[in-house]
Image (cartoon, rainbow, N blue to C red; front, side):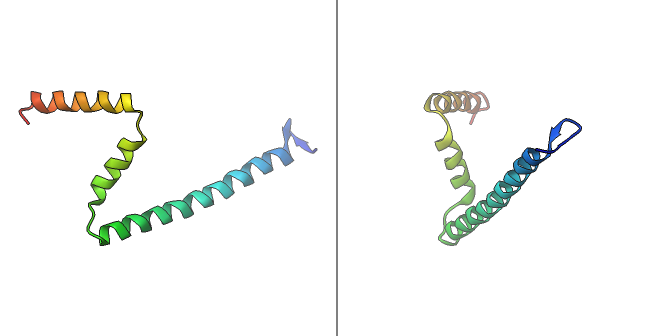
Length: 80
């Protein structure tokens, strides 16, 4: 294995190429997600609400409950 300045060149190249491939896949997936949102919008769904719902579904139930309680407190404090 060749080394330059103490760096294993082949291993470094392997990591860089793997990351580059994954970045390409990530871009393709982001495009697919945009298409699904576009379809949903065309079907009359509110995209902002859908994004918020997805964000909430990713959260741990305890974290979500805590956030909702704080949100409710802030809304009441502001007279909402």
